[in-house]
Structures are given as structure tokens and as C-alpha cells.
Length: 245
Ligand SMILES: O=C(O)c1cc(=O)[nH]c(=O)n1[C@@H]1O[C@H](COP(=O)(O)O)[C@@H](O)[C@H]1O
Image (cartoon, rainbow, N blue to C red; front, side, top):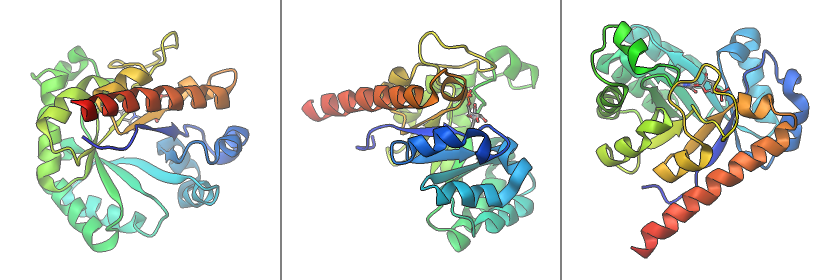
């Protein structure tokens, strides 16, 4: 497994950076990564990405691309000029779509980490079955994760419940990013497959993506620092126990 401690990614689920400006300013330097998702990107586009990068954050652009191979490859090429470090696409788009995306990345953005979204953390076993998938979420994540890595993606987005199985199934170099993080006592919201920050980090996640438990907290800066510390401690404890064996 990776020897770096697990890190926090702030999910900036707001229309504009200005809407969360105090927290963004106060967390500069403490949290390194921020995720621009569909809400912010559809409201203010590439300018928001530049604005967040100018604040000193490394940007994870979460567009969850899912289309025919040519369209996805061209979208990867389009965002290659932006200051981003990670980009998402849906693994359910299939092998060819992911291969085209991986080739576009190699040609236009070799430093960019392409992350394949497996089964969304809001999807329960019954809602997965309703879509015609007979497999359990865990089996479907294993299948899609292996396909994504074979197709040339460098990392995956999965629920914390599948981190341990992916760590066993895949090479240690594969980056595992997990949303569906809920500190004990916080609201589940629309998430279905969740664990606490410490549990996800101990399972071997590289990055935790957290939004509402931070931005809906009475003190978002304190909440983010607590989650980041909890994750870093749990992953350091795991790394030291591995080193001692
Ligand atoms: O790709 C993602 O980041 C993602 C994948 C997934 O399966 N589940 C998931 O919640 N996310 C994102 O992670 C964030 C989670 O936000 P909170 O539930 O508020 O912590 C949101 O921005 C989601 O878009």
C-alpha cells in the first residue's frame, strides 16, 4: 500500500467559491486538495477552477464524464489546459471509453490522475439491483475497478466499504479516493455506503472526500481539521503496524 498518510479533499458543493470564502481562506495550507463538482462547474465553469487553484489548492475536477469514447477523450483534452490534478469519469462507460480517455490524458495531460467512479456511495444494494445489476455493490466495484485499471486509469472512487477489498485485488500504486465519509454522530444525508474518517483511512484509502459534514457544521474550519487529523492518525497507525510486521 501507499506510504503516504490519508489526506482530506474538501468537496466544494456550492455555486461559487465566494459562497464558502471564509472557510476556503482559513483552510489554505491546512487542507491541500479541493474538489470542484457539477454544481460549481455548471455555475461558473473553468474560471472557478482557476480561482480555487489561485487560492493555493490542488484541484480535483469532478465531472464524472460518461459518454461515447470520442466525446469523453475530447472532454479530457479540453480540460487538460486547466490547473487540475484529478479528474473523474464513470467506469460504467466501459473499457473503450476509459482507454480513449487514458490515451487523451497521456497525450495532453500526463500529470493528471484519472479517477474511475465505480458504484456511487449513494447507491444501496437494492437501488443497484433496480438498475439491472444483479451483483452486490462490492462485487460490482471489484469488477469495475479491475476494468478501469486494465484500461489505464490511475485511481478509483469507491465507497469506504470497498477500500479493503480493492487493496487486496489491485496493485498498491492504484490511488483510492473515498466519499461517503461520516464522522460519528453526523447526518447520513443521501449517502448509503459510509464509514467514519478513521475507519476509511485504516482500510487503506489515500484520500477522503468530505462536503456536508464540514460545510454544514457550526464551525467548518474546526470540523475539517478534526476530520483531517482523525484520518492522518488512523493511516499513520496502520502504516506503522505494517512497518513493524
Ligand atoms: O466522485 C465523487 O466525488 C463522488 C462519488 C461518489 O460515489 N459519491 C460521492 O458522494 N461523490 C462526491 O463526494 C461528495 C460527498 O459530499 P458529502 O456527502 O457532502 O460529504 C459530493 O461532492 C459527491 O459529488
